[in-house]
Length: 184
Image 1 (cartoon, helix red, strand yellow):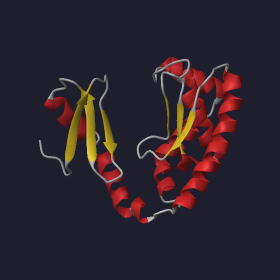
Image 2: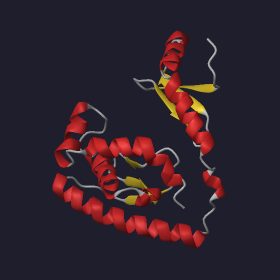
Image 3: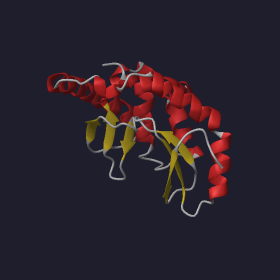
Image 4: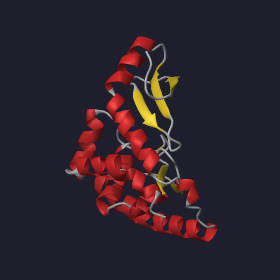
């Protein structure tokens, strides 16, 4: 089946299929091992409008690499992010009765945050340009992984217990997260 865009299929040990538009504007389809081509074609057809919309938005946005930051500017933003996330993480960890180890501040193209099984937390420094409630959501989301290392209903019940309106922040990230790359 021919689609109005090129795409790359990435097979991995996962249970669900997902479509990702890379920062460079490439369409990647991540699927479980042994996923049939017919399923992939159907999945792409069902999501075609979403894909075309996001490819169109990507084409209209300036290339983030054109906004080269100096080492001094980047260091200042990272320092600011470290201060913010250190305070927020300590606050919410105490509230949620969880522990964590190291906090790292990074510039990941495809993630806003992550939590390792050892309890190391990573946060994207560009989040400092997001609304406060979005930062809170990312911190609570990563700390919830200290209880549930997945994205199950039980996981989101933990997040909702701390932030009843967390879905607004998720929606903001889906709809506006790309603007954080143009913030500086």
